[in-house]
Image 1 (cartoon, rainbow, N blue to C red):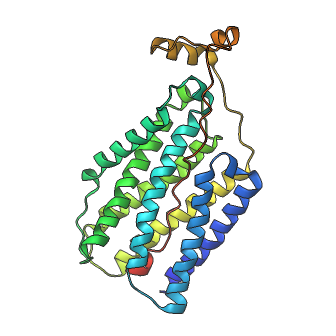
Image 2: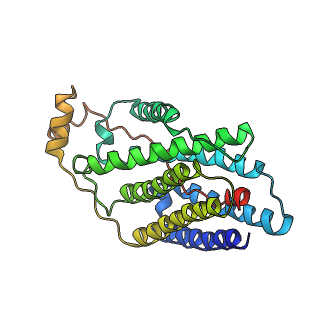
Image 3: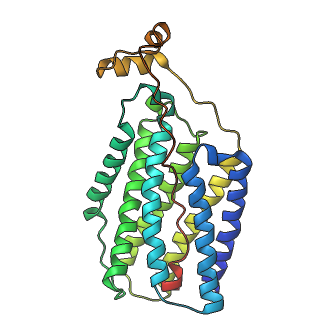
Length: 277
């Protein structure tokens, strides 16, 4: 119990520090939903600490609700990241492209669902198991998302100093540790060994927060542009409005100025330690 509360308190301090960095860098302009998610994570972790220390509640229902909201935020975060990465090309994209991204990510989450099953040995109620299954599904999705960004970073003109890849890297690291912990849990029974695995997962989340705080404290690199390559790609795929053509005929091609409605990133909480701690 003491170790769980200590980790939650450390997590709150690091989350508050990260939030201050985001305010300093005005990241809410670039990733508003991610910024809101950080605030929500700090608030929910604070509620968890109050429930554990003052109310002495060990009910799983607050953690279950938290996990469902967390999964929803993760979905919105991935959509925002994908849309933000395409920021230099948004004026070339057809209408409805953002909706298409949302549907693709939703389909990927459904495909990840059967791949994230695990043998649970703790006798949790079925509704809590569904919430845990959803978290594992999005963990698989986050790992795949990070790998996709790493593989196509050259084409997307992004590097390690770009905010989107920094966020995806932190999510990917935490997700890999979380999935590894799930695999270990499948061969364990409740006890101190089970608890220490949860502590390892929580520490990986803290490391991701520290990495984010350090990375966002640095000045973001200017996004690299290659209009020739971008134009060639869209001409091949049926869009004959390369940058040169747009400059010559500005009235024939309207820039798509879609608002940044969906953003965010996953900042998982340490709340579930309240169930297994």
